[in-house]
Length: 392
Image 1 (tube, helix red, strand yellow):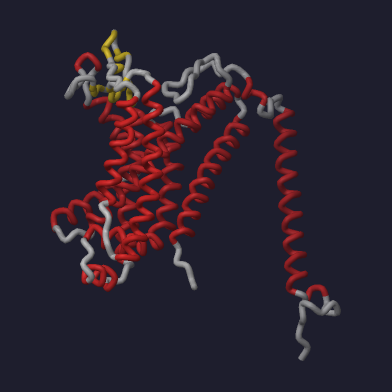
Image 2 (image 1 turned 45 degrees about the vertical axis):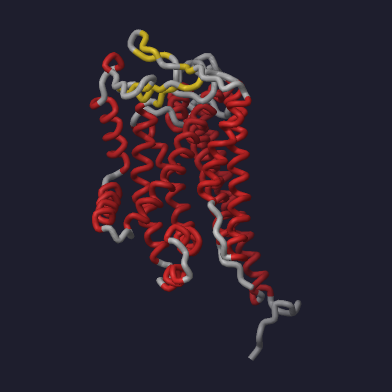
């Protein structure tokens, strides 16, 4: 019986698996390329026949529409390109804040679901069932209606503390007046975070080598509060505040959180956290019971058992499905168009309606969400690889 040897040049071409697979892949690639060429050329011919403009030259034209919220300076006289950048930043803002809050809330609910306290466990289960079973779009409508219908008008705004107002225009609160010391304090806060990371690494090595614990929580809290406070004192301890004031039918000054942003954030976080909680619960339950029992037998406190023994092992199960939920949160933020929040999809839709260039607009939407998803996946894959077991 004759056997095929890939390294033997006398073997017939189609009997060589490596060469055969190369031929198949080349053929498929050529077929896909020809199909794409046909679709693109056919679309361009049809657009030209109907006198519809193509290309991205419209990005340099004046947008002529306002955007309610913007992290950067923007007016109707700016270009479509700048308007789309505003939309991207708004999407990034709600996605980033939503991801952070979702991870914290989902982890807390997931741990509470396994609590030995009957009431805590049942309340967590009710939360998970309720928010998982209601479609996210309905939740967005609910929160949007809540903020607009249940809260009073600006003239009757709730004022629980000085400088804080809550009404159907959003949450408006005072902030420190502009001063260089606040940027210095921000730098001090980042420096404190870096110091805590290094201190945590040293404390864990010390614990594993000597068995002695270090008051990491209180030391870290002291650094987070003390270092910025020291910078504030050295910078002159400014106390001037930019307090919101009611003028006409709305407030001026301070910082406001719009009802649209709040409704979108509430809906995304509460909905996605219910799924994250189940992922965390499953990850914790995947850890063998002997692990925490062994940790308790050597005198570790419950908090250290959770942070040093249970969570590091559970993360290897938690991270892959958690990545999918974080991606879903980012993509679900496109539902903001339903409640009037000016995210990228909303701004792109307005651009398409004004310019008539739907293909380019939809292509931009697809490209932006593809990039956001790839960046999120890349970060989570890096973290997953970091937490993976290292074989010796």
